[in-house]
Amino acid sequence: MASKEPASPMPKNRVQFQKGLSLARFLQDYGTEPQCEQALFHARWPDGLSCTRCGSARFCRLSTRRTTFQCNRCKRQISLLAGTLFQATKLPVATWFLAMYLLSQTKNGISALQLGRQLGLDDNTAWLLKHKLMQAMRERDRAYRLGGTVQVDDAYLGGENPGGKRGRGSENKTPMLVAVQVSDGGQPVRAKLSVVDGFRKDVVEQWAGQNLERGSVVHTDGLGCFRGVEATGCEHKPRVTGGGKAGCEMPGLLWVNTILGNVKRSLDGTYHHFEAHYLAEFQYRFNRRYDLAAMLPRLLQAAVTALPLPRPILLSSVA
Ligand SMILES: [Zn+2]
Image (cartoon, rainbow, N blue to C red; front, side, top):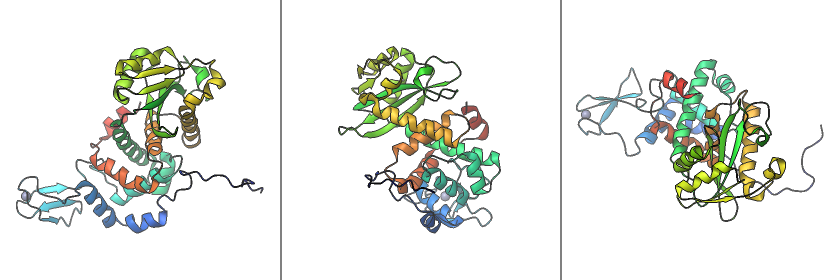
């Protein structure tokens, strides 16, 4: 087969060529159930566990349920898993860790089906596990706002027109806003991918109120609804374009269009159909792309601080 190597050396991409967390290293650090329980314990109680009733810091571990600690003084029992995303799970903690590893280290994400195969789980269990982790990612990212120079664009996902903009107004597609904070040097800092209820000024007003800092300078293609960012005290800088391909090549919107292209490729390659939760996964990975090795501990942190997500609530949140 012909080699795809470029004839001349290409500049190395900082994201593409970083080391990440090797599988060997992962197995060394998180390969056993006790190691994973220990890591979970430290993520949840970095200053150690103290009894919520009597304040004692002396505990023993139940021999029948290893994830339950019992206070030596008042006998109160505290679960390592209750109150986290892992609450009531029947899976070993090590399975969750391997799932977090696979979700955080693969470039384009991993489908629930693939995840199930890798972990030896049935499809339903794999689907629930994956969506719980994605929910934790989503909650984590919700806290951040974009500020400074921000590029915002409207797009549709789904349907049979992957080209995007020409489908504006189409009914069986999912409308979304793609926003990227850009550094003074013109590099993307952080992105927000939001499914919205159409491209209207009131929708953009509400979105801006939740996702942008006051005083941001917002570049858009000039679609009328984007004036809605002004309600949040942002400066709107519209650009007039002819739409279509020319619009995609506007330098002011370079990064939103690049990211949108990546999202679409990622969804096409990994998933059979589009769901809003997958955007959360893409966004989470993009916003942490410079530090792949730290992504697993960060996802663990997100999981221990996320609220438990019982199955019926999870199912209702996946539109
Ligand atoms: Zn106690």
